[in-house]
Amino acid sequence: MRGRRASGWKWWRASDRPDGNARGARLHALAAKTIPPAWPVGAHWATNGFCFVDPAMNQKTKALPPDWEGDAIIGCHGSWNSLKPVGYCVARIRFDHDPKLGGNPVGLEKIVSTIDEAGKVRARPVDCVQAPDGTILFSADQPGRVYRLTRTAP
Figure 1 (cartoon, rainbow, N blue to C red):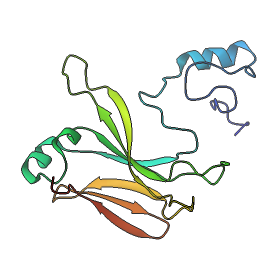
Figure 2 (tube, rainbow, N blue to C red):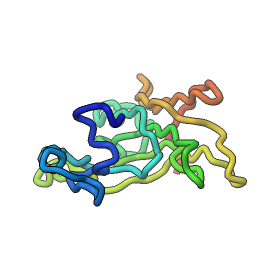
Figure 3 (cartoon, rainbow, N blue to C red):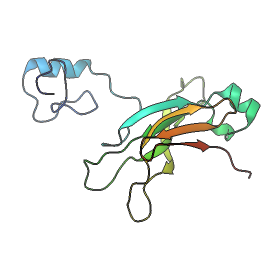
């Protein structure tokens, strides 16, 4: 990646602040133009795919809790390149629902962990989609399956 002209890797990390290794006005100018993520996830989570919970569909199907409406569901593939396994999950990014605040992300909640109690990775989520019945389907390339998330009765 060092050879790519527009790459910020190694010189700044997921924000508009260069790290201590950044040298030169060009790198600082590029960093100043960087748009930081609205909601960063952890290092090595490797978020591959996402979907938003459609409020109209959920009000019709009631497949998910009402407070999930408008929130993002993300599939995190995880990374082998970490001392402790991280990522390897499906998570919900909660958004505020106040029209004055503009629908900004306000929190992250892991809803499915694919790391078992012994620390072994059981699945590597890839993508999420809301099915016509309102449930969330997520795929995992390891072990090559599709899983369904739905609301359980209170």
